[in-house]
Image (tube, rainbow over all chains, first blue to last red; front, top):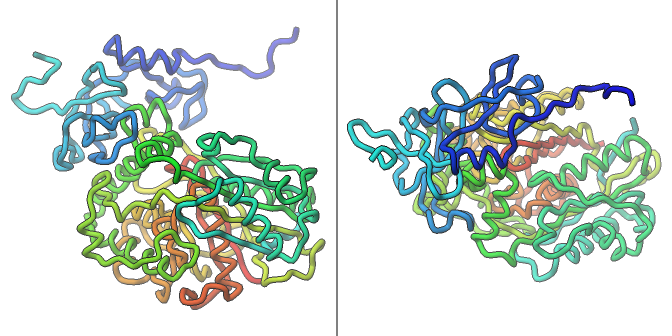
Length: 142
Length: 384
């Protein structure tokens, strides 16, 4: 059998492994583009920015700052018991952006751009963040 | 490539349908074919848009529509491109007719969500985002556009009244549109007093969950040289794609798929934005109308919401935008929306929009976005 004419890359990890990573292993799995350096959590076989494949395995930093966000008042069925809550886009230290939610935040002023946050492992579904408040101990550190 | 015309169009009233999407689609399709002065058997291919048929326990609805029209032997395809499904169907029909694979094609979009409660409908809408990387992390459809609105208001220091002006204007237009879901005007105070859905988006920033159906017939003038109506000449039919998840985009102050679709459509039509007489743009939320007008090149970045407050985009303004009332107030029956935008252009050009006429109808642009811009369609039309 002739060799395949195109190189079909295999992903370093699956979507399921990403979900298991943040749910069980307190780990944010991601991908790094070996050519342009783009970091992302979003699953794929090639870089969405420059098309390079294969991608390298990466671990995303759990600390970052809010880029933009919203207080969700009307939730879908999966979050209906958690509304209102914050949904935020986070610029991670070391590169890459990730979306996530922050429970029990009701005021948009609390999620202003630049607000520091960190990944907060939780039994609830989805990537969860918590705000990093100066001189206060947060739930995950107690 | 052959020239392609839109020769007939029809829509039902958006709102809550008492019939299935299949029935509504078949009815408006029959009306559009009759409006075009054609017989169903003259249709060479049917392009159906329907996203949420599975909630009605119905997939593969295309052949059922053709059966209902008495043309079961005509090929059909049922396609999905989230909120841009029926403009994607029009693009496919255009490609078939322009390429000589059919002389006339039927485009029909239909959606029914009214049998679902708000919570389930919110859930179904959110499935059009990236499920494991957005939806599962708490995104709703309003939440994603709210995130774009949050970036916009911080970048340009906008006021709520600027977005309120878009809502007030589109409600005023819909009040004069018999196809519209909401046929009532709202005041700025009503807008400002409405509850938050996802900050900074209030209730009146958001389109409703609508049921509805819209259809058109496209045909090649060399096969059908004597149209029953004033036809729309398709000057450009462009589809684009872009990175879906918002966190993977470097720029949150615009939709890259709209920017590229607009640029390519103007190039193919050989026109500039200032030559467009009126627009139907994708305003699922008020922020979406502002972004569309900037991304398409009608206003500089950060200025479209201000222009709305100054009346530039009103029906009698310098650039009428969404004379139908838009998704915001005419309604957003997901898979009917893009076809419905073209129905509005067709009715304006044919003098069938009494009470909401725009001053000039020589050229028009329609812009339809799939979810938060993973897909985009732009069409440019002109008179013969």
